[in-house]
Length: 93
Image 1: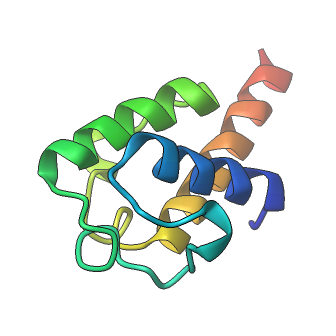
Image 2: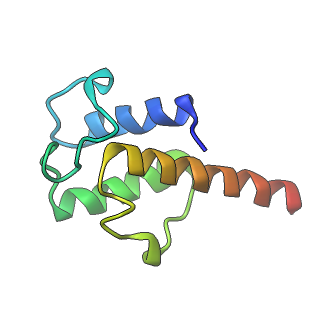
């Protein structure tokens, strides 16, 4: 599930909150958070917290993996999926 609004917000959050010296428009899906963007383990924790606050989602401990947080694209896909689940939960409740 791809959402361009989510993609833009995730990219802006990465640039605003992390020591990334690129504009959001210059981030590519395949950019590695660690190798290409230089985000370390503390930065990953800060990114998780920022994503949870920004998107009002809960990132489960079991989702904290190198697969989920490998690249810009993997984070965008994960957040879009979680945001979709959150919307469904609100409709059910």
